[in-house]
Length: 267
Image 1 (spheres, one colour):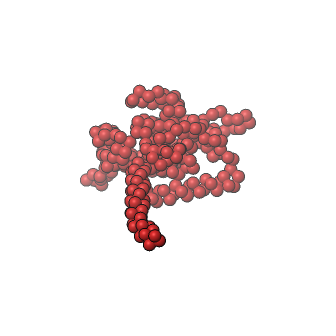
Image 2 (cartoon, rainbow, N blue to C red):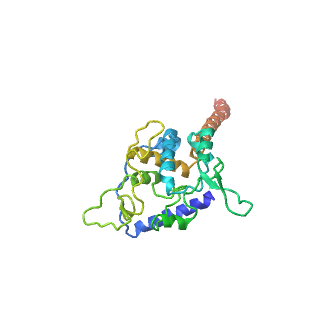
Image 3 (tube, rainbow, N blue to C red):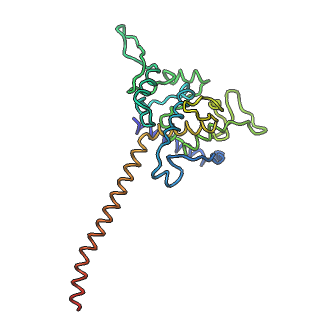
């Protein structure tokens, strides 16, 4: 299912590229920030998730974003990847209400969540979601970073891109001006501001900090196995480096006898 969703996300990226090619207004450069998982050669090759930032990002997503957005491909047990303990994960899951089995009358029931459950969605279906959001359909966040060009930087900038429209630009009712959204008019009102949450670890919750943290968590959600891939890559590179050294040493040893014999014949 994740592969199918990734293919759909790629399709969205290609469509976005086609829109730009057709003359869509180019967005301004993204805001600059440092990511532990990418953005420089060292981070791209060896970087890992800043677990403290990812945990704060989950707090932001859980307290703010999850009221409208779903994350259907994530299970609560996946939160172990950002460093949450089994007890914390059980408590988070249990605080959610998820669909249960049918009762004896064939009616649907609900129950507290389990670590094995997928994230609870805020709406039962797309129609209910649109009805609650003036016709707009908040996208699922499971692969949102991979579905956007330069995903983490885009999200980080978008969340801070709500500004007053330029003179002469009229924004229709129900839309909001955002300088990093294609077309600049977005249905989603600004979801974050300073002190949108009170961080459990005492970090100051500025808009920039919240945007950075939630983008880190969303990157993790889209790439939950990144750490394992990079660790495997380092081991493979180390293995090939070792084999290259051994091969060179064997070559030197074998050919040293040949060179010695050739030298003796010439004498």
